[in-house]
Structure formats: C-alpha cells, structure tokens
Image (cartoon, rainbow, N blue to C red; front, side, top):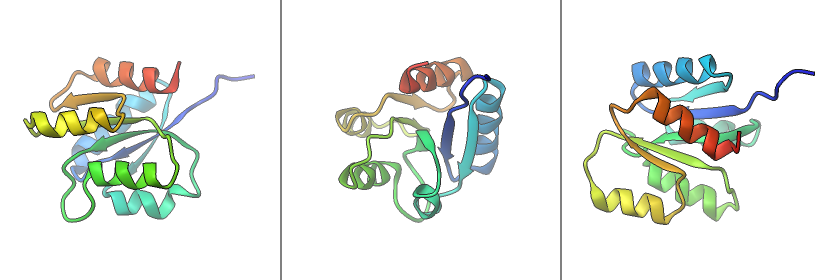
Length: 124
C-alpha cells in the first residue's frame, strides 16, 4: 500500500507564485490544488478533500485570506492554515496567529520553511 498523499490548497492571486508553491509541494509528495481567489476555493471546497491551506493574506479584489479563515471557522472548519504574505504588518500577523494559523511566512520565504509548516499542519 502506498503512502497517503495529502491535498494542500494553494490560494494566491499571483499565478507564478501559486505555480511555484504548487510545484514545490508536489515535489515533496503533497497533492497541490491551486486557486486564484478565496471565492474560487469556496466554490469547490465542499467537493475537495483538502487537508491544509496555504493562503495569501492579501488577495486582490475579493475576500482577503483573513476573511476566508473567519468564514471557514464560522462554518465549523478546522482546516489548518499557513498564511503567506508580502505585507509587513505586525497587526495582521497577530490577528492571523490569534485566529489559529499554523504558520505565518513572509514572501519571499524559504521553500523548506513552507514544507516544514505543511508537515506540521498535517502531522506528518
């Protein structure tokens, strides 16, 4: 029997970063599914077996990452969330950590930091 592959949703409006993160996670044995917005993720969420989110805080045009985290919590979800951001905002970081994120990574972050955070989130 093979190893269980965990599905990680990568939600970022930056297509090149989203693809790079997806490729990195795939290289470490995770199944990455990519979404360009919180709304796109929510539209497919019920039909996926996502085990963890890698979520940009500052998504253009719609729900922010923090708002998505709140909506998921209100819906009873306890999906582990790893926030990624280019913003230097200590208050946002405190809000994210208070709401229970697993990790808060500032772009550009080391790939190993992201992989470690995903492993921690999934308990692998």
